[in-house]
Each structure stands twice: as structure tokens, then as C-alpha cells.
Amino acid sequence: KRPIGKLIKLSYVTGIIILLIIPMIFPIGGNALSTSKVPPTIFNGGSTFSVVTTDWIDSMEWIKNNTSEDAVIAAWWDYGYWIQTKAERASLADNSTIHSDVIENIAKMFSSTPNDAWVSLNDMQADYVLVFVTGQKLGIDSEEPFYVLEGGGDESKKQWFMRIAGEDLSKFLHYDGITGTDYFWNNTVLGKMIPFTPVTYLHFETMQEFSTYQPGLEPVYVKEIKYPTDGNGPLRLVYASPSFTEEKFGPMIGVFIYEINKEYNLTS
Image (cartoon, rainbow, N blue to C red; front, side, top):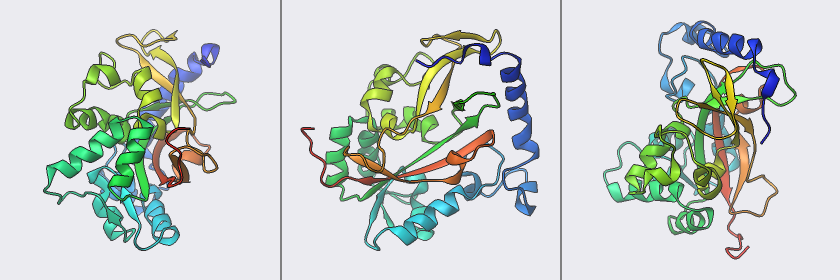
């Protein structure tokens, strides 16, 4: 663990207050669109942040310009329409999908181990997998940036994936029904695809820090890419949208695209 320790005092409290105010006043890349109370969905990915970013548009352009025309993109059904219309690529499911077994298979894939997910993705003839992760970069003066997640991306939908997959939620989630367990982070492909790792847990009101989860605590994360581009794992990160690499604090609307490693050795 890499505890935040003394870095979280007044600077953290101030940062949280600013984070709660700024998204409502100064959208990222502010322009005429950002004056709307609710921005067009693609500009914030349907997240809880009232911001305007180009993350989704840039991501769809990347897919359109960097994948073969017959490429198939696996993602949660929420994003299928954008993949089909903006990136002009096939998706496994969208909001018009009427076969519940297709959505159930995607949910099972995200909830399964990396090896089982690799087999499922190949069975579904997918070439890439997309995940959407939202959160906020904290305004803390430190060498390593810290984040809180839960803003309406796949990190906030994982409990629904598991319910649809028919899984026992207690294996994946803590008592609050949303915070991931060690099993989720270390043994599911979704946990591995989210490029963040929890390093400490905080109680907002008392600013006490804990090394393990307890009810009422909020996990704090650092960046960690588990499937790098040059890795030999089942997936390889080939694209991360601009919010992930920006240095300024505030909302992060992250779209991450992984290529399925067709030469992956299941016994490795």
C-alpha cells in the first residue's frame, strides 16, 4: 500500500470542496455547450459530472481510424450505438438489443477471470474491448496523483453486471454494495481493465485513513495500467482518452480501449 498520510489534511478538504463546485461552474473545455445544465450525453459519457469533454468523440475517432473496418468492439450495451454510428464499427450490443442472453454474456465476461474472459471474447468474435471509467483527480500536492472513482462509468455499474451475470455480489463487493473487494480487483477482467488501484480508505468527516475497507469509508486510488500495450496478457491497452493523461485536477471521463491478444497463452 502507498498511504497518503499527512498529504491529506487541509489540502484534501479544500480539494474536495473545489471538486464539488468546479464541475458545476467551469466545465472541462468550456464552450457554448457547457452552459447547458445537462450536456449532451456523448460529451460527458452519461456520467454524473456536468462537464463537456471530447473523450468519447476522440475515442470513437481513434477506433474509426485505427481498427479494421470489420473489427468488432465489445463493450457494455450503453455505448453500442456510439460505436456503431460514430466509430462505424460493429458492437456486440446496443440499446436496441432484444436478446437478453447477449447482454448476459457480456456481463458474465466482465465478471469472470481474465482467462475465462479471453475465451468468451474470442467466442463472441470480438477484437477489442472498451471500458468507461469516471472519477475525480484530487487537488493534493503530491508526486503521485490520487483519485476517487464512482461517477457513472463502468466502475459504478459493476454491481449490475454481476447481478445480470447471476453472481454472488458479496464475493466482488463490500458491504456498501459498490466498493470492490480484493477479489474484484485481482481476479476479474473488469477489475484488471480499470487502470486504477485502491491504496487507502478515508473517512470524509474525520479524515481518518485506514488500510482496509470499513463501512463509511471511501477508497482512494492511484493509476495503474495492468495490461500495458507491450504486455503478453490477454488484453493490451491501445488507447486511453485525454482525461486520463491530463495533469489538472477535477473530473476524469476516461475511455479505455483494449485489443484482445489473439496469441495469448492460456497456460501462462
